[in-house]
Amino acid sequence: MIWRLVIGAMAALAFEGACLAVTAERSWTARWTDAEIVALSDALSEAWTHGLDPSDYPDPQSVRDMPFGARRDEMARAIWFDYAEDLAFGVVDPRALDADWTAPIHDVDLLTAYAVAREGQGIYESLEALAPSHPDYQALRSELIRRLTLVEAPIRVPPGDALSLGDEGPRVDTLRARLAQLGLLPGDIQMGAPFDGRLESAVMRFQTRYNLAADGEAGASTLAELNAGDARRINQIRANLERWRWLPAELGERHIRVNIADYRLEAWENGEVARTHQAMIGRRYSRTPVFSEDMSIIEINPYWLTPTSLGQRWVRAFRTSPAYALSQGYRLVDLDTGRRVDPYQADWANRRYRVIQAPGPNNAMGRVKFLFPNVHNVYIHDTPHRELFANAQRDDSSGCVRVENPEDLAIWVLSAEGWSAQAVREAFDSGETRRIRLRHEVPVHILYFTAVSDAMGQVRFVHDVYGRDERLVAALADPPLYRPEPEASEPSSEELETEVAPSP
Image (cartoon, rainbow, N blue to C red; front, side, top):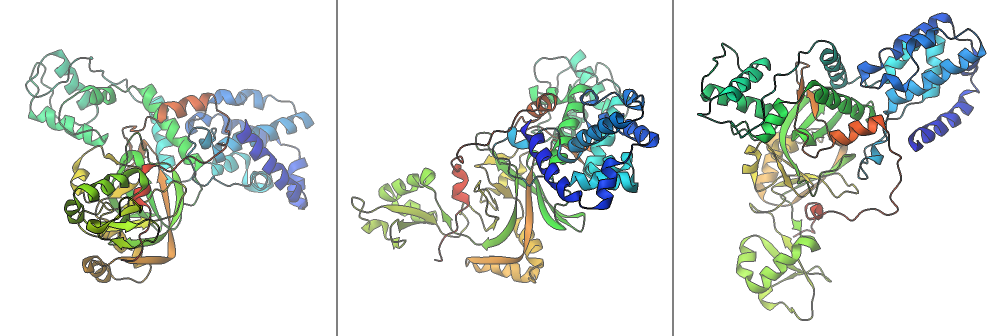
């Protein structure tokens, strides 16, 4: 697998330098003690708790039974590095699954880690230290252990038509029993009772938890989540443990984290969530990619330069109904000179034009956009359609992340620049375009997790909106090769949300 070959080559180069150090050389040549072999065996016996397949590694007992000698040393060293690579980097190269995946790869010097392990840290301890230490990873790991050892089989609601108010019969009884099993319907369960308001409320709580449309009806999507057995949830946990292994150990002391699948933006500071915001993400045909970049600019009351793909509609509008286009805040600009043009005087036969939208209530960017230049032309911004944040499923954009209450997010970002909350609000209220370059850039991580932990460390499963889990689970069993694309893909239509307009 190229992923392992690249890491192996890097490790070999690093080892050439490490061999210059006496301690590194000693750790490489020193005999493995019986205690170290037992520790390695113990670590392998817990591979399943990390969501890894135990069959990918030697049987722990066979490791203990290896006879003392140079061959055992060689085998133990190879086993340590094989298991260490999976814990530190993951089993699957994420780029083999998603060509748009551009988040930074977790960087670990395994040669140094091995030397430290042999010089005193300990074999078992060194391997555990290579796994992600983030609380979310540990919560997922605990939930995996619980589900593999303690969880009772879920009560399954028989397939059929959607269940709603007034329905009755065995399927309604089973629905009640399943929601009670999940702790969403406390109290006595009345067999034979019709689908009532109390059951409807329990269904809505379940739907809200899984980011489904909270309509109170047990339709196909709701029943699919209700009937998800342990095998599916276990695989979901394994997939998300792997995603954590792809990420760097440090995301930034002060950073923004967007979980696409959860429609959620979090602002983190000093290891804690400082702010949370609802978010909209790309539609399924213009999916928001996974990547990380540094936010460097905030633009308040922005202009919007329409892209070629969407701007032609407004060019046609200027030709047929210039008054309407002007009323929506659009302006006609000469494509060659950049000068604003009176649409009633436009030379449609001989000149080329482009449309921009001035700041205002109808601007596609809303009142602010947060810029972190990236190859995807995807950013965070406001929207004039704030009513859509009331929807449970919010895959409504062309690829960018739309954020609720963006003024508050701007206040949080600009507080590190010395701006007071009042100064930020005054900038918004002025109506003037302000382009602010950040002295303290903010790392932004656009991620995809379908199993997350809450403030109490409990795991919550969310709807796999882009259908990525199944493919990742399959890849864990048979990791695909990563083959770089010969050419970069064309930017999506979300380009409309990324360009910075000239000064008015």
